[in-house]
Amino acid sequence: MNFKTQLEDYQATQSMSKFPYSFEEWEAMAKKVLSSPNYDYVAAGAGSEDTMRENVDAFKRWRIQPRMFRDVEQRDTTTTILGTQLESPIMMAPVGVQKILHERGDLASAKAAGELGVPFVCSTVSAYSLEEIAAEVGEDTLKWFQLYWSTDEQITSSLLKRAEAAGYSAIVVTLDTPMVGWRERDLNHRWLPFLEGIGIANYISDPVFKSRMSVDPGSDLQAAGEEFRKVFGNTKLSWRDLEFVREQTSLPIILKGILHPHDAELAIHYGVDGVIVSNHGGRQVNGAISAIDALPEIAEVVQGQIPVLMDSGIRRGDDVLKALALGAEAVLVGRPYLYGLAVGGREGVKQILRNLKGDFELTMALSGVKQISEITPALIRKTTN
Ligand SMILES: Cc1cc2nc3c(=O)[nH]c(=O)nc-3n(C[C@H](O)[C@H](O)[C@H](O)COP(=O)(O)O)c2cc1C
Image (tube, rainbow, N blue to C red; front, side, top):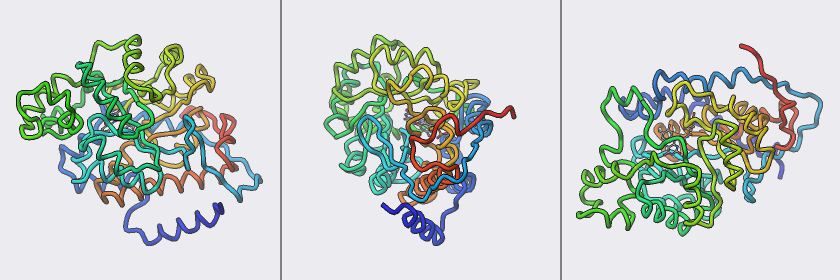
């Protein structure tokens, strides 16, 4: 493949685009088109939002030391995760309730993923069912299913079996959200999407969930919402419970929300297939360490035994390069593509992803790197301010 031509084509298309380039402009445009509660639901972090800001600020303390004179004419951004080759180490993080951003919500994002071949992680609290979303991603693009573990074991089991049947190839178990964090903006609005029945599509389409109700949940969203609140989130879980997920699925299991190296060791001990270093975009524990600062210690204990992925704070190509240099094999993005969705639907999501991929490839080349395996800790250093 001629990467130079590919990049030139890309730049030519960009010059005709009506969309902006910078994350900050996308965010400002999203703020204009969304209602205040909807915008705040996405933009908010927990508490004083200190960790949410730190996710972005911490990246600035890591600096690239580019290498020169290294023939970057032919570049290759491909990488392999759990046996699947990806065109670029950039994935779409699981995000629920996307209907608050756009009528077609997750379906539009999933379609964009499929059209660009960017891996998509479907959330348990998606606004459309996991089967409908899988169909939009299509067969040729990697798709994983993210699990929020219900207090009702049979519902959890049913979701896992449906995900496998729908063609998802891994289960991402999110550990950091046994309950929703203290989000002051949402508390001020006294509103959550779930209260309006948004984000419960996987429940109202689930045979076990339906069997728990005396009415059809699809025709009584209020009753369905109440039932959902009873079963969402499970505060009793501990490491031994992973066995239960193993028994329900033959798919690889990836744990999302790891921030402590001891938890990474436990993940390996319990035989999981990968971890995602993440603080949920700063939405759960305010005061928590930024994901990028947690990454090196975790990569150190994992020692390449299982894939380490990372999210929380990725905004531009240099962030991707830094995360890979600190030990991530791939990164996931959340808010950037959500703002793309709010502003431009499927086309907006595609534009955001194209920008990120293009920026990453350029930053890689300008840093003297031709392929992902050349991105090592030797390429960056930490500064004090
Ligand atoms: C509005 C919103 C909803 C989210 N929903 C989920 C979810 O359903 N499941 C999950 O595991 N993570 C969820 N996340 C967290 C993302 O997967 C990801 O960890 C985070 O957005 C990454 O940070 P970033 O937004 O700075 O890129 C959500 C994040 C946002 C902003």
